[in-house]
Image 1: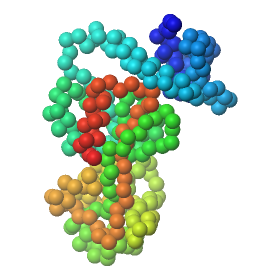
Image 2: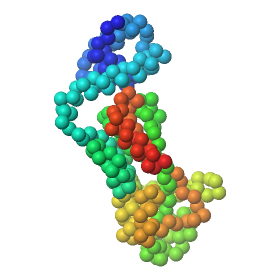
Image 3: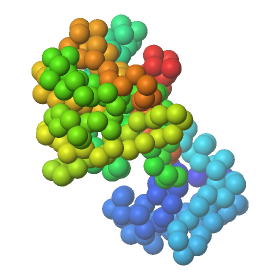
Length: 296
């Protein structure tokens, strides 16, 4: 049985997009070509690889097994193509698309340790906005604070953080009535919202007596990531609903305090995301393993 490498690559792309048309568009070739080559491949292996419907395609049971083997073949082909470029090079690069707030955490906490453990791996961080985390990953690893139901992507949680209310001690002295989250609006304390775009109001969450509650605030300052909100708190600009892993240093320095002891902060997760069809190289596997071990 002779199988061409190009057919393997076509098969992986169709499995990735669950569509002949979308796979063809990504490869910039006619959809009819992709469909024909997949039919030829199914003839060579004597098994149906996809179930076809008007909504797209899905892998058959044999197709699932064939995909695993195809990824190994694709990985080997990719390594062969890279051999001339890698000759004489000791460093490997891992590209990570990451939210700015998570990037700040990695730079200050995780990456120094990772660099000591893997001095030959260079981590290339490329920051994302909140909106961009819902776009396609371009084949790279991505670190983000949300997951969404999509069969194309794999999500691995690596941080369980908490969001709570933080303020500079000096600013708190000016608002002694702040005893409960529901006091925020009436107290007129300036609030820092982490959002993209200008919005008139924001919703913050907290838990009390086993129930989750929401309050509506009118922000005095809007920033596009949690790092900027943290820095604003340290300057006494306002109250922030922010992540404990980011605020830890300010708490130790005494430039921020956590409010409302009787209210439980809400849990927040960060995820490693990548396309299911992606074949992780050794450097990416090392990064994921080290990241999960560090924070879990």
